[in-house]
Length: 259
Image (cartoon, rainbow, N blue to C red; front, side, top):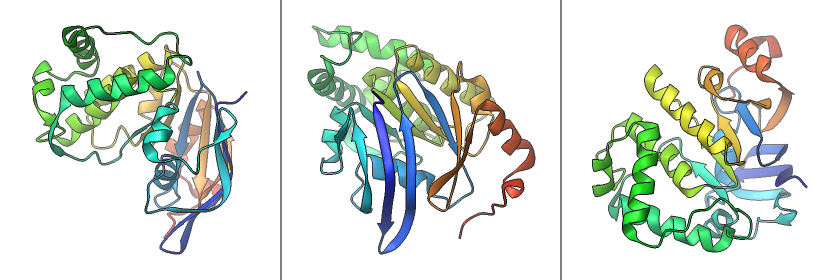
């Protein structure tokens, strides 16, 4: 049984159709990359998947474990084990980073305890704090971040590392990362890739939305590379496809940036 199925998905914003018949199947323990020109619908797909209210699904379906999630709210979708790492993470003043993570982890544990055998049970705040600190080390963030508000005052690179660290802590079934490498230097890209590799070892499925093959080279595995254009996937292949796109661009596929 494929864990996540997207069937002929159509979605629009303010009456303008962005997704025009998207089909993709993503299973646990699979790593997918989605590439494509600007405006091709990659970020829209990620946001529609988690139920962003500004998008309207007009037809098609999204199933998790064979059950449609289109009528579910964003938090209910997350309780199914879906995680979205934002392209532009926002700052939330007044929400303590560590407190946010602990509440989110406990909430997910209640809904995923029968689905995931490797979820730790933390009896004390200190136990959870030590668990989070370990994951901070994996992405190169200082433990002082735990005493700050969520993303407040973080640099662009720190916000991206923070998103990936949240993914490691929460242990979703499927993680969708929207351009986790944008704006990062090479050391940060390597750190983010290593964090993704650690999630892969848990058996989670991972989708990396990116413009560049650079981060994909550091992944322990890459099962599928998909090219999106005008709201649908127009070509799929293996890792070699990402390298071909890196060297040739999208012109050889007859694509230009969608307006």
